[in-house]
Image 1: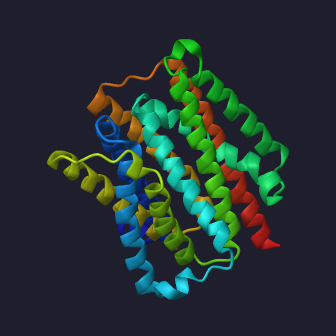
Image 2 (image 1 turned 90 degrees about the vertical axis):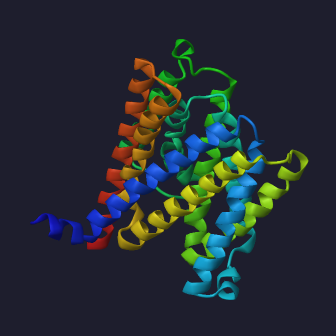
Length: 298
């Protein structure tokens, strides 16, 4: 197969777009880490969601129409999901001012393991012993990252893990609502309700924005929108279960950007723990893909 034919393959296109999307997401987090030193996390997230809500409104208006998209079969679940995501991003932005960019993402990388564990009680899904074993080893990897002599074991690490748990719950709710609502409906509620949720907190901490800070806020919003556009495009080409392992590229970008911009160097134990966590997550994604293929053949 020639290079041109490989690029024409939908799976290759989707993977490339997702990897680029993770670069934009890691860049967004790097900008957030810089800006959160001078602006409240809730204010940064409110501005991000304002622009994302505009993007969501524009996107769904072209696809199915805003009125149609707002007609959810599970509106209260969608509202709770949007508020949860808004809160998670505020918690993430708050924690990242105390942790390194790479350290934050090594801890946050455990969220797919939490999704697998929580899918049993919350979604009534069946998880086989292989995936439970992967979850167990993934949590061992997280404990290695949290070793007291690793430089990560501090209250901010607990906040980072809280953000990972919130994001895992958000993903569980996304799976749940996807059984009833369209992608456009979920996207619209995420943007609009997320902005409303951030604005429940942001006004209490709002402060005037300097010209340079306004530029950083705009860049954060632009990287978020571009990243989500690429993510949407990739998911339109290939099922999420195939792309899931490539989401870990955000950790690779975070390590590189953290080193280049902030001089961050991870401890060997942290890298070992991150490797175990990522390996466990990739194995779970591989098992879910095999189970999906097996179900399709039945």
